Image 1: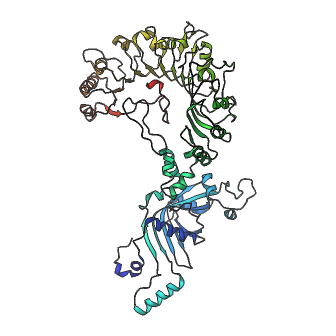
Image 2: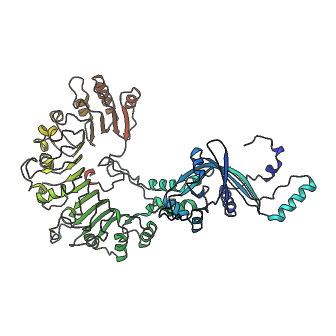
Image 3: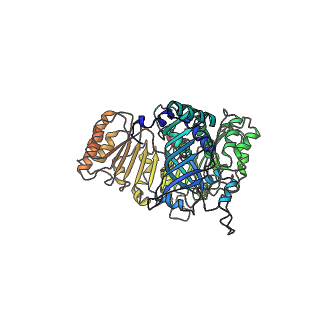
Length: 639
């Protein structure tokens, strides 16, 4: 901007109005843009010359939009110039009112079909024409059609509101009195894009921000402290009630409304609203607390089943005293052939005093019989593994939680665990009754259980049977991480000696409330690089003694990452000495992860002294590694 004295430019001084609210400025601009049929877009060529051309701006989509949008032919020279220099100017001028606006900003180009369709009108087709080649048809799908968005960095405008007579009177008075004649503008101003910033974010980016912001941040059930999530309005409801602009973006972000939480306190009207707003977007449904005694209206069943689009994720936790539940009945023949479902968590709680369980079906697939080729994540709990099995051929993460005292034949267990050739992560919980029919042969025999793609294995059983039975009879030589909960020395007696042969590339070990001797630690898994111990009663000096005692050879010489819960501040000195001792023995750690809410004292000096990277956490890691969503239903292993 010019630094010339205001006295030398009285026209601008008289017209300037700094008392206008930001939203009013935006409305003024919309008034000007809507009053003209074209705008001049100026760009710079590679040789430095500037070229302008008339362009028709698309009508603003919200009351707070400042971004200018043009539909253009990407075969024209202006696209070459925009690729050379994204800095552009757009100016508009109304010859009838003398209102004008000038936008200085940066151009963005997109061919996103949804964006094109959003702004496309039938009148635009005339600018492209049908080339009769079957491709360039002059419609919204024509590859020549692109969107130019101008993101303004500074805007200057003048808005006249008194008409021609008012301006002529002003000119006459100026001539007679010697004062400068201004166009009698009620609203005249300039402003930069620093105000208001949210209005300058392109709608597509703001939409993505909303989707990311919707990811739950509630406390994971893993954290053992007394943290309770606070009930609050749904994120999508909050952002849709901020202002008209954000409401417009939120309502047009279909995936924001895909989550249908069908719990008794939600009304049919609420669920119907979400259903309508998500349109054809596959939904994420959650069905909690519905027992067979609860009245389930047909309209609710129809909403949840979504015969028009299917599910993306489904979490169903129901209880029944009968042989069927209305939702289970519908699940048997789910009406979406080869539906889009990716995630299924099914917990069916059938009362122990029920006279009899459902009749065992001969078919391995008992629900979703029309197919689920995208189903990657499955959790089956309660009676679900026995009577409500979905297709498992594409599953990569399987939680099999055998919580009911129902004997499962080895042949069925094997069929479940080997149904998917791509099974990568297996979490298995069971009691002795579930493993009574397992053969005594080792996995190399024809009856062995071979899981060639398994990378992560998680096991827990309250009486310890599961560890010896599974670890000694499953062949999974590609397992990289092993998670054991409440395992004791005797539970793994037959496994210790062959552990490094059974899992030759095991590098990560996670122990939750386990208790082993020093000899077992030294014998098992010699190549561990990542060790995690979760224990509220874990005696830190024990692990310190094993990992960094200068008077003996430390276990796991290749260990790089240690993760544990710090129970008392006086344990920090012991951890400090262990880290230093390993470094002195040329066995340094790379990362020390501490679960604590206590202030870190001496441990922080480890990082400053460049011994190790120190990181704290307040929520235990989710399983499996790399899980992108919050798994609130992984409660069995965190009890």
